[in-house]
View (cartoon, helix red, strand yellow):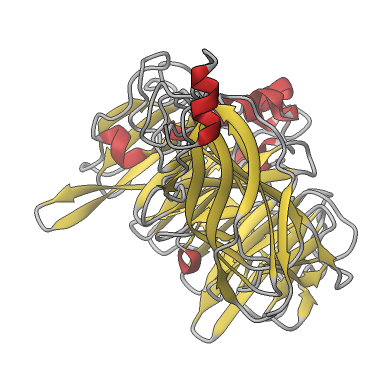
Length: 533
């Protein structure tokens, strides 16, 4: 016996207690990102159960960057953004209700002029030749265009019923401008016939020609999107024409234009129902479609990746690892109740590729004025969630992400952490990190968790609050360590005391933050055998 006390207890017939042996085990930061698909008991250590307003970077978990107010158009609702760049012209176009402005990064200019605009925003923008075309989705406005000077001008296309008010989404394919058909708001534009209208080569006005898909679509619906997809061919890619119906049918064509001898359908694909008229965007040359079951890559779908709804794995969905969260958000949103009938609400479901920050953002509508985002690291494929940005529409302008709110304030991304509102005040946000559950390499053993030791870089001193969730019981963290001796950015390795007994634990970080920079690099957990008698 090693101590007189233990010897005395043994001689009296007692049980000699085991010696405590504390161990320090390293736990990686979850750079694999958010995972709401897998059972927490089976989730790998590189994933997080929650990751909000923290971005999975390259070996670290960092604050999402902040925003600042770029310009304000007044208290309006229902908004759209477009970018026009031609020669020396470089403008962000801002549309809200029945108004339209240009902004060059400094000056906001009303370019509506004498246009008789109804109270509906332009939400479709398409640059073609030396001008940008714009259209609402309510069948109220004619097609307008702008050349970078003066005011917008009616383009004068002759399409459905001899005019161009009953047109919607636009696209340029092989030097021709194409439009999808829309009926009027009074009738409900979602009841439109499945047809497109297209102009002549390089035509920016004049007669349009009709082309119908009624005999090809199996599931009915109207044309929600027109665009291009690509197909690999030797050492290049073929540009193909595609349309997506409101039912989720995707038709792919090759050829010069619908009236040519070379025009033919070469592919018919099915995805779940798209979430709205703006739920389509490009990630490089790949078309991404946001649907009620997640966001799908058309490149994967065309390669045979998509399986019918209800299958075990939807391989074409880039959101597969967050599928439960995506589905729950859809069901709980106002859109999930109103469905595709709500012509104003469904345009908030949208996405954008933001190359400067290696991010792909999916805007998730909560109501007609609120939203959050699921954000993917475009290099690693890791996901997280952003909140606090109630975006109605996005654009990348002068390399920076911009979005518009129901204010209608336009915000621009910045490299610092703080979100700054229209009055110049910093706005706080919630940051959450919950790792996967980890048995620290010793399964089936009760452990007493003593400390979490993060390697974390912060500015403005150290301020860290951590805890552990033990055996699938979530508990808000309360253990806080501060150190304000150094205000510049510094790497800290604090010892944060925690309490918990169980087999496995998840490290839990949660706080309200305004402007402090934080970068998690590693965790260590101090624990000991809890089976000591």
